[in-house]
Length: 323
Image 1 (cartoon, helix red, strand yellow):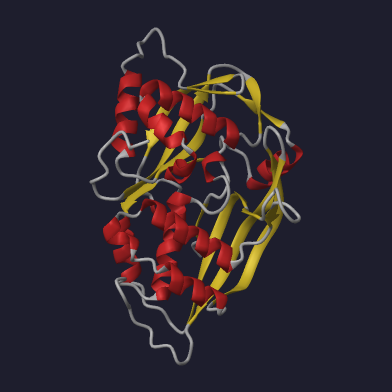
Image 2 (cartoon, one colour):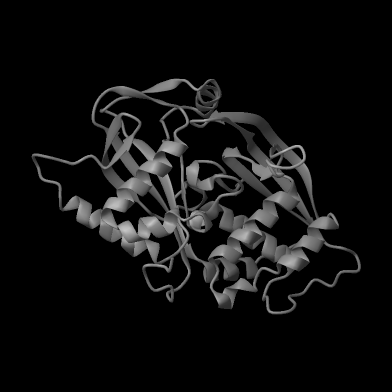
């Protein structure tokens, strides 16, 4: 199916926060990423059916991400509730949030227009529900898309801006970067039909993290930027232990989907990006970035794309951690 819009504009990324208010008292399971994913597509299908159908195709799954519904509770309480699959209270006096990222610039004006069309349905006497999660209905209170820096989870940028930012990074012989895995993250490996079957990777090993991000870049980059990330050279660098784990604060975690329990990890992991003694670090080929700058580029992309398995269903929310 062809894209229902022109894909000739600049490659832009958006991270939005939707503030929602429940219509009535009730409860909802602690992890609801699967429900949010379905609810967003249902809403989009009513507002822009051709776009929703295009996004729902299997090979388009990386063009947006959804979080689970975020409650105003501590991380410790939320992790415990997710593991035990308990229901948490919803109160009309409080607002709750859903994070949504759009990985194609053309999606943002369509989403904005759909919101405008939706808002015109509202009157002072009646506000139609925006989203239904399980049996609970939510009103849309606000959409945030500010560039609030490292303190929050909203923002907007372009792929070319990410490239320029990475180009300005000066790296020592053993530079480090730390990734924060804010929601359960994992990588699906193996074939369920052969051998021992599929399994979930429980650690953010460098080859899984950065190969995954390199594929995300190729998914969304226009032809003129696709070669910025040199996948073959990065694979060789990873295989030769150019990047290693030097510190971590990780915790095994699991959440519950409708049909199964999903295992993975949360926390932080620090990677050291090493430079070989005989390696003259300089951009090569069609990329303006060195290999290590490309890794920083991919780490910054993670803020929008997520990392790993089922990022459109609440998993893999990640970013570079600040000290």
